Length: 237
Ligand code: SAH
Image 1 (cartoon, rainbow, N blue to C red):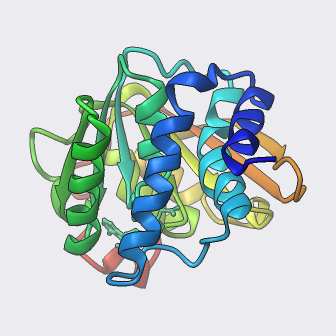
Image 2 (image 1 turned 180 degrees about the horizontal axis):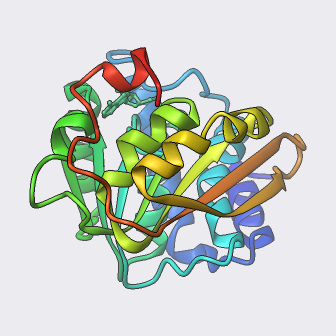
């Protein structure tokens, strides 16, 4: 089977309309491989592995109860563009803001957005702790998403200040999520979040376990959060 056919099949297995995304995703992978020599983007380069662990993994949120249409969405610590770029390709009527503190990764994503013609993506180089203090970003997003950036108590301090009251934060996690949840009670209380649901998945083919944690924002976050850059990770709430 041609590998792009594998990608199409995997997307169809997610009940997705694959025709609008399989071509751009294929090109996205080529760009990642190209740039990976110059800047460190990902350790996952094998074709099938990238489809599963980056692309299909990014789309798992489609299988939750959340509606991703016509939303203002922030991907925090997007790295090489996950889950933000695959989702922006599929949900064209939502606006995506992708943030990362590494300038080189944002420079790479500028090229990706240009090449793929993505009109619904804004890229920002910066740290969550700084951006969340700015009026343009604080409590402005319907949905914040984040994968592989920090453990949940730390991640909540980065992410919840960006979420509008009544909006949601979704953390992409692995099997360690139960322990992270147990350690998050204090952070949730202080930051105005409530666990709305956890969704467990198995990736196709390799059967790896994944979990998405949905946190609903029930109260405004006090302005003292997030604390100064570096504080959250050094001394989690
Ligand atoms: N979400 C991507 C990348 C994970 S690596 C994926 O799942 O593949 C974590 C990324 O988060 C790195 O690119 C790092 O630069 C970024 N990051 C870590 N702490 C951050 C912070 N405080 N603010 C913004 N970006 C951060």
